[in-house]
Image (cartoon, rainbow, N blue to C red):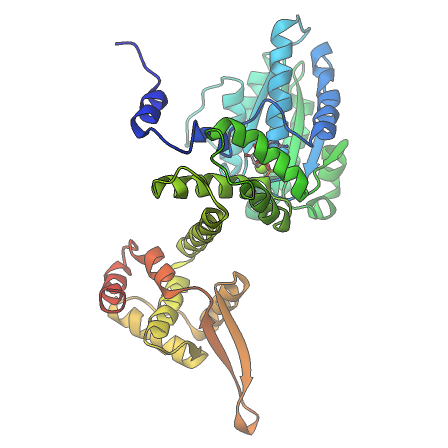
Length: 410
Ligand SMILES: Nc1ncnc2c1ncn2[C@@H]1O[C@H](COP(=O)(O)OP(=O)(O)O)[C@@H](O)[C@H]1O
Ligand SMILES: [Mg+2]
């Protein structure tokens, strides 16, 4: 039987009264036009155009807050470049590889992705980084191509493994002749350029492209364009797009945030069986997305931090919102005893409390007591049920969590 497009079948089966095709609202969908990014697209296009005549394009450093269109523009311009190159006869073949260095967060993974971009097969693990690097260099030496490597979210890679590896990549171009390599470094951390090793900076900074935050009106244009394709006609109340845009604009002009809100609002309306999306649905979408964010944040914590949150959540459910550090640590020891775990020292716990406070999951206020003494009052900043929901499938804490849920959240 020939392969069929399942999305078509599934769409028909659900017969949505809201969406034509919600995938147009997905973050990885790249539209045919990117409103309000003409300047960056032209700028990047002009630099990369050198590749069409066989010259190595300058390295590019692209920076701006999350959701300002950096990845979308890089994908858009490079795929247009490849498409154009396939139509004309270029003196040198061009290859492009986008590597998300937050997901591929080791030197090995990044090099393996670089290998994949030139169809070089390498094992998933097992080689030394030096060996892997040598193989990539060798493969490039034996070709004669222009290799454009997009290193996306390099701020995250640098935080994890430092910037010496990035420096190594910037030097690779010297060893791969007759091939040539261009780098596009993308960062969400707009301070990064100032803090980079000057040698990397001078190499990556040939050309800089800054992505400013989107204003509310710009986000409205972006949302309208996607909404026309994603939704059935006339299902959006007229204040829905302006509202999603306003929220995204307030959160550093984040197009992803606005698009997520719009998609989730549509899904909420659909689940309720409605044929219209209203501002109230957006409001609900916002709560639901915030909930997801908090749950992700809690799930990514270390085990002992989770236990601390669990103590605070249980206490809050029992009607006691604020705990002193002493009470919190005693509760922590209690749980560790119960699961036969090894307690951390108070000093380590204090560090974890500080981290939880920075992550905005708890608040901790120093309160002066009589006789000049001071103590910390620690309080959960989110609802206990979110904490319990996040920890319910934890292999060590799951039993306790489900017991608590049973007695308090029946
Ligand atoms: N100008 C634009 N027009 C249409 N969609 C856009 C535009 N800018 C960003 N987007 C969309 O917003 C989301 C976030 O953009 P992205 O490029 O991933 O941001 P960044 O890489 O800067 O964090 C993506 O879904 C992208 O397609
Ligand atoms: Mg990005």
